[in-house]
Image (tube, rainbow, N blue to C red; front, side):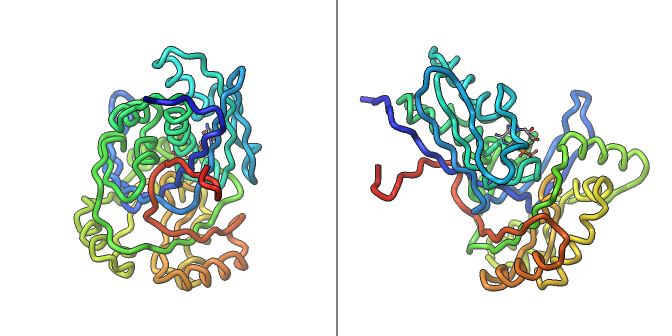
Length: 309
Ligand code: ATP
């Protein structure tokens, strides 16, 4: 028998970096076909959901002021979607502890949507299948299914059709967070503009990268990191070139703009190297703040407190 939970349900959801992001030409419907390799990182949002008279969203953390607290918040939208589908009122108070940079190219909003889906399934005892959760996730946004799945996965379509990738080992990353966010649609528009005027580099297929991931060797993975949106992000934010250069100078194996940016992600040879690269990068004055993370980590999942409740 399914039970309805009255205490808060807490769900942790990861940020993503795209290890490979090949963007197709603009389609007549305004979207782009993607072939991407997502990788979930230990930079997380913690989302807590509890029954309440009406729906609300509260956000805590450094970037909280940049997050909408109304119906445009992806977590709110997820709650309304599940409530409507299950014939309930969306009476929940959602609290987001934001560790993922906002508008940083790391799918922070998608992580919150994924976390809310998983939390409501438990809170309301819905017993949703994985397929049903993925269906809601894909309706909420193209990165949301991966925020549910986690790990390392190839995404096609708009990024929502996923297949897991075999990846041996834990990879160590340094993330350089930027002072200001970048709008994902603006970065895509800039890529379309650059392509009208010339031939910015295009990622091929990710086969070689998949072999490198299976080998678990970061020195093989590093040179294969590629992102078609990087040229567009650098065109809008030329200062990111300095950030990328500083990470390499600090000893990273490779650096790449994460998704639509402006966060820059640096792959390092070991956990110790990542700490060193992070320390040097934070002293270089080329970003707002630095985070050390590792991947792959699981997708959105319920977390229990120390007493196992
Ligand atoms: P992506 O890489 O998935 O395109 P992103 O990581 O660059 O997105 P997000 O942090 O998801 O960017 O936020 C993009 C915009 O979405 C923000 O500027 C904000 O206005 C809006 N937004 C809606 N819900 C959320 C949320 N829960 N957390 C953060 N931003 C949200």
